[in-house]
Image 1 (spheres, rainbow, N blue to C red):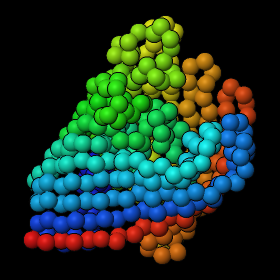
Image 2: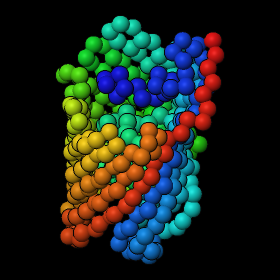
Image 3: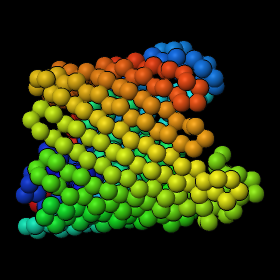
Image 4: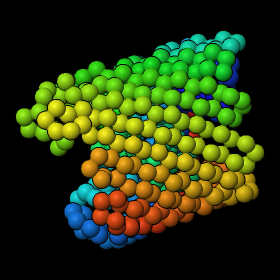
Length: 360
């Protein structure tokens, strides 16, 4: 479990199409999702749409195992809009594609430890939920409130250009990541406002199935075109964001428990600094090899009475080894207005493995 949490990008380790003795090969797997969601948020301004929408999402995982140590791997996201809850409060329809990961990695494993070095497009090393962003790994439909699929989140799932080192030794694991933009404002390498950001994390496996960890990031998070940049404010280079958090994961028998707590400080000079506190607890219980129930309670509280609490529950059913059906109900309470918003949805997730070639 410790190894899986540390280096999820090394898809060749778990790709079933690769024979263990193969020196190299190429592999392609994918997660395909379709969903129907109902929410009154879809009828509000500025979307002003139907309360029921249908959408799809595909995440492709291409991998090229060059040799025993070098691997080129990626994660490409394609989805309709709206699909994610982030879309409910924006206008428009369409299809978008994003490269979440595309990096070259070197790995070395020995008896009591391992090292992995990666460079390219990376997921943020902050927190722990990004290891479960795939619909097949997330037992519910939505994500914790501090995570988002676009750039308007404290921790975006969009990729960051940079480099990362992952280390394990015994029960310890650690990671250090350098990126050219912030997890709170991912920027393409072709855009301006490229500022160095550092992210790090440390974890300890207390016993098999029980791991605790801490992580943090720091670096400039604004650009002059951002809607959060105040006119007359200092240079974005002088406005760093600082985040730190703790996470835990526990697996025992038919139970899986996850939890995170995080704090985000966004520096300003012309106005008071903006601060957010976030956390969630998630529980999943396997009732039968085909059935499970899951629930998550989370919050995101910010300065100036900003924030919400969300409670979500879901039932999952596996008709076969490659598919998962989820039925979910979520209730969100907005602190400022006191409004209650509900989201009801059903999602079909299919995993496919269309290509796997290995050679010596």
